[in-house]
Length: 281
Image (cartoon, rainbow, N blue to C red):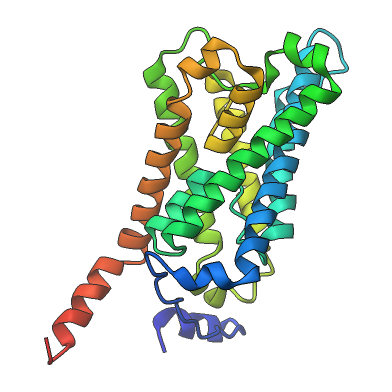
């Protein structure tokens, strides 16, 4: 029994045993034979569609009514993004894992939580869902959509592209780090007496990051969100800055995955210890 387990027992709580899932195969062809695989792709597509529809509609509504008290304001936009992530992750976590974001998928792939084909097809489904969700907003509110920026991400006036890139890296790091921490089986076992839903801290992470970075880039931290809005809006500036909303989130996701797996979970040290203790090596 570890020191942490003893402390929990002294407080009247019992910790549960946990086991880490085995690393996902780089390429698992057997996935293509399973209905659950295609069901997960559909879930990612629909979740990202709903995410973009609600959030971009909120952004358009804010821009339309920014001069009067009918606007939800920046706080309302942040709540829209964070709240939808909470709801959609809760709904889809048991089906697809509730990624709804290529950066999250990329981070989980680097940690060997998903295979390469699943990661690539998730990202495609997410991008297609984002395009369709934003397209619905434009179809329902075409004049307001065109006149209020289309909910597209770009580096705002007064900030350099370097600042925008840094904001996306840090913001995505916060999100993906939260995803790893909230879904860590060791944490779930250790804190089994604390009734916290994993989608809740993930949604709050999205909310807090939006509060900080909306003035800088409009907050991407989700390449599918930025890509879908840019495709439907079609103006030059969002496309000129589009690379920031892919490179930044992917770097942030890679850093978060490395920090959690290598530093916090000490996977490299564990692997080295296992290697040294194996008498047949």
